[in-house]
Image: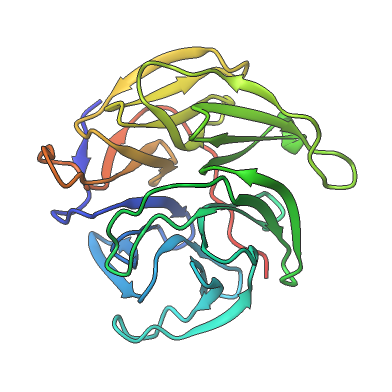
Length: 292
């Protein structure tokens, strides 16, 4: 695959890509740079916050959700770059000292949000990770919050398999991707390891293609791993970045793969911190907006 950056910008910790197939735009965040960004018609616009932001997801109302350390907010997309207009939707995780991490919407437009101990200081610098205080929460369109899991380390990847009957999600501290059956009451059943540890990095964010294969960004692994529906390794896709963080399918035919990445403070590669794109020839699944 021929990987190209979508812009000449480099980010501290680009994450959470979302493709809007109506407005033909790519949304993502720079968690450590406290910014939400949108790429549309080859132009990048951003909104600056004063705390970490881990996800940026459009809503059916025409605004967007941003998951900040202090809560989940609605963002007015017409508001100024340096003075974003925010209104609180909910506080999904009430644990002091935690922050949001992975967040995606399911096919019903409900937000699933994973949290972790906040590992960033006031300038976006690294703090030591000392506890498994994270959780997994579901936020409905009416802002009702349902806690689903506790005792999580670093929640990454949020995908639905088997027609929505199961959740695939990783705890990066464990180095594996888990599969949880979704019960009839909406709770999660007993987990099992779906994709085991691999020498090529730690599991970060993922995208699913139309064939049910999972493309997983491997933190520290310089690659994506494409897992088959049974969790076995299908192929390894080399990348020109050391710390890919997540990926999403988009573009006119939903066959372009966009990959976010982080830029380490030392020994960074030229494209580390870039948002990359490449044509795969494989159709991906649609990103879902928040239904509220």
